[in-house]
Length: 284
Image 1 (tube, rainbow, N blue to C red):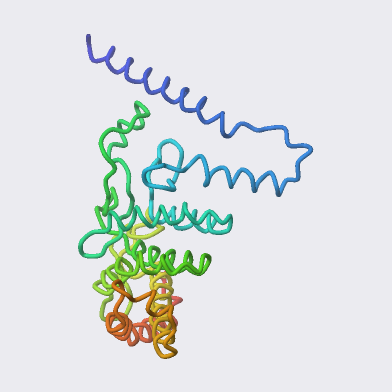
Image 2 (cartoon, rainbow, N blue to C red):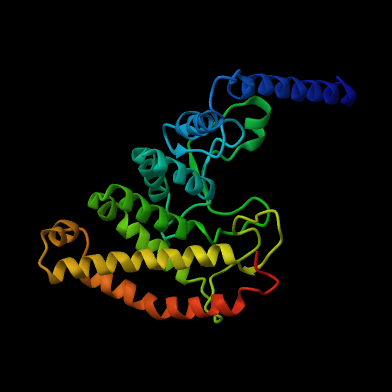
């Protein structure tokens, strides 16, 4: 078999696979007759079905897509979870946090994504092989994300606020502190959180350094951790039973005070720097 025949067979196979994928998409995305249905309700149902049914993986949770992006991308999952929280699908949000906590690196970094490494096999054959693994670097410059840690913290806080379930804080507190400390390692002399190329949502632009997106998320995460500290201190002062429930065997008040006190000065400096630097050209 000569090279020409091999190339012809390969191209034919790729085209056939693309046709198959298109036909597979159609069962979800073909236009339907909705003349008698309110457009807002119709769009709501499409969005609900996408994040609650089609993009759910029973092993890892909310994925970025149904076919070629069948992975839990932390950034995509965070924004998808905004929809799940609105729908009251709290168990699905907790599943995302469980997955990210399970694959959190020892130094505290929350992964860029959790899923399968073999995109080529997925593209050509529509199959995933091997176990689910965590990926901590992008596939272009092999740099770590600067927003994953903060998104994990903020999502934990939002889930707690929606559910008022102290179990959520107990379950994810240690991982949130580890993620927070991981962020602090990348705060530079200008008091801003820095990342390297392709480290945040603008992962098709070559930007090296601090970005508005990641720094705003970090400020939000610091504010959320501050809430946890204040919550426990108020409960302790009032000798509230909730304090005992929250802390017993799981959370020590000294740990909260120490971790959040160290962030106080960083938070002030970071906020001032954000205001001063907001209009610099490298902000995105």
